[in-house]
Image 1 (tube, helix red, strand yellow):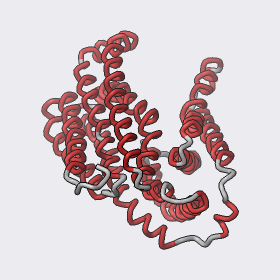
Image 2: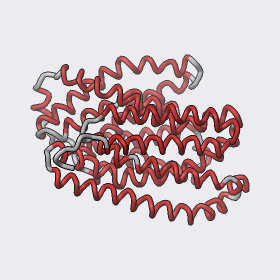
Image 3: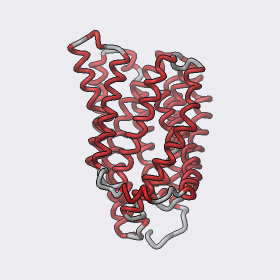
Image 4: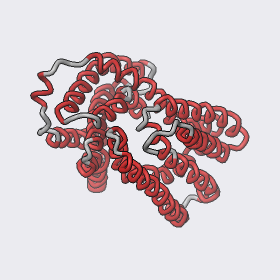
Length: 370
């Protein structure tokens, strides 16, 4: 959790700005943008990394984990940005391979090691495997991008005005991203405060299962199509934009329908394998979470309708409003209704976000593409 939040902060959401910039220009120009983002990120590291020492000063993490924390944080961020870059450059297959190396391959290797050698079941071994996996993903990224005109790009002076412009765009988006992340963790925080670890465990299990729907749709559809949406709109290819948006919308509705259907069928066999009665007794929480994740996914449709038009303030406002709603709803509902109150509070926030973005898209001034 600490590393995940730090990962959000260290990048300052600069990629949000650079995504649109890259899709508007030629190969040399976007290579220059990537180079300037690297310069920006190095400066961000120098300024922000020392601040994360508060994690150790405040005893959130022991000092003996300092090296692991900083090493994994920097490498995870490099890998994450490279995945985003490959998506923007319309290289979805390579981005998926990089993601698998970063988050999947090493996990299976470690599990196999644990099976054959029980003495290896310790945190340094897990972190070593993690480090190897993310290192492999970074090396593959470098190899994949080797043919970009780097030599010419590095001969061009750093565009500090462009970086400053990007920072002005990305910082408000960082607040928006943190708000969305906060919505997903507020419910568990309130449950922890009022009911303890046992309730959080039940809630987290159902969240993890339902969130698979979001992960599948995001990686299998949103990641692939959203750069094409942005490119078509920016280059005034409005017929193409409408066709992609239709495919995007139908894909989200279709994907949701199929995945929710299978989730409803499979949840009871899964609970049977787990074999703990307390989960079966609270299965209504899972049903509420399916509603939550559905609205979260549906919100991508108006989100990118706003994003391609550079209505960033509308996106930021919607996410922050949803966070405020989530906080108030959790504050009211969790003490009185426990697990159900937490799930309903998050549902209200997700519905607020999706509906607000939808209304804002509908109220935009008509353009010739619509």
